[in-house]
Structures are given as structure tokens and as C-alpha cells.
Image (cartoon, rainbow, N blue to C red):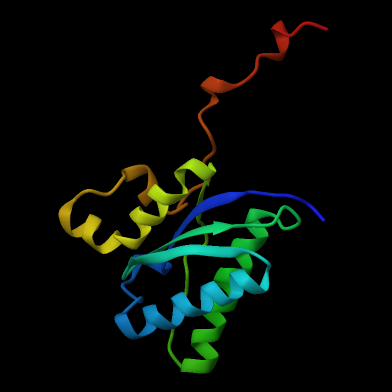
Length: 151
């Protein structure tokens, strides 16, 4: 058995940023995503969003890749809404993932819980409102220069 503390702030949007997360669908999607995270042995600390995107604070076990975890959440939730609720629903292709330390969990949970207020008041953190619309990675100014590494 592994000891792990791997926390993430995940964000993704609806297809073409359509406002598909209406109050009735939002409640269904949120409940489904929390249950699907649990099924994958993850733990969801917070979930919320806006009509066109969702934020989750989750712990993901090391035996499952973040990309696989998100793919399972997005694919199965979209399918669930189509089949069980007979509503058209689709997520965009990408997502954003930010790692969190255990010291940041409380602040991250508070940010997600108050998503609607942050958007209404203009107090969002722009970096956390990116939805993986294009492939991007960390800044390279932290890269280790192998040419200068000692052998």
C-alpha cells in the first residue's frame, strides 16, 4: 500500500464554451463527477464552476495518471448526461491541471466553493481560469541545463 498526498486543481470547459451547465444539469454533473472520482479511488474536496466550465479540487492516487483520471471523468459524465438525462452535452477536448501542496488545499477549496462570487466580483485568478484550449506546459526558465551539469 502506498502513502500519497497528490492534490490537484482541475479545470475544463464545455464544448465551444457553451453555457451548458444550467442549474439543473450542474447539480447532476457535479454529483456524477464526485462519484466517478471516488470510483477511481480519488477524493473530491470541492467542485463548482460557471455555466461554461467546472473546477475540481481532487486527490488522485499515484496509480492513475492525471490525464487518465480527467479523461474518465469527462467522458463518462458527458455520456451519462446524454444517455440518462437525454440532454445534449459535451466537454471541450482539453483541461488544465495545477498541483497543490497540502498547505494550499484550504485556499484552493475556498476559491472553488466561491467560483460564482469570484466571477461576479471580478476576483478570479486568471491562471486558474485557463481551460487547456491549447497544449502548454510549465515555463522553461526553471529548466536544468544539462550542458553545464557535472558528471
